[in-house]
Image 1 (cartoon, rainbow, N blue to C red):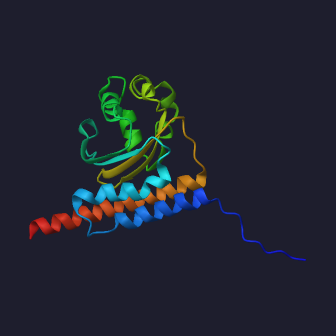
Image 2 (cartoon, rainbow, N blue to C red):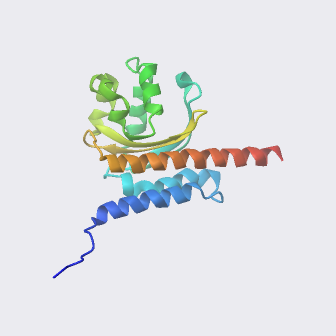
Image 3 (tube, rainbow, N blue to C red):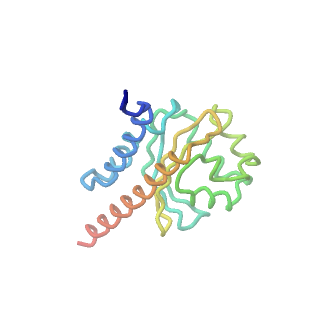
Length: 194
């Protein structure tokens, strides 16, 4: 007797993967007003990334890594002190420019991974962020070749490791976020010149 049962699919991974696809589709929606675009992308992505500590993101300009410009911040249910802690980390003398570059050049994955071996010695993170019960971030960073981008992050209670399959999916999303953000900027630029 041959039994052809369908493969077992874990509902949580299906839901997470669907959320990534939903957020990708939302990213390309050119009818969403500029002031709601990132919020709607993050809301769609939330089931895939949020582990109970919220999710946040912003648009940024990293053409000058010494003077990053952040716009359109979105914070959903994150610890209240986290934005200030992240600013403190970025301005701390213990944060060399090389770490900032490493992080913003990484398309997706855990924040700890984006810094490589240097994360173990990154004292500002432990000083400002660890006291909030946050050890890591899971990040999707859609950055294009001119270093303008869209970063979405979800805090984690533990140092995060993800499977190669999940990493590939998040990198896929980062490419689409960068492309959609660039397309929106280009269309906005065209409408301003008319």
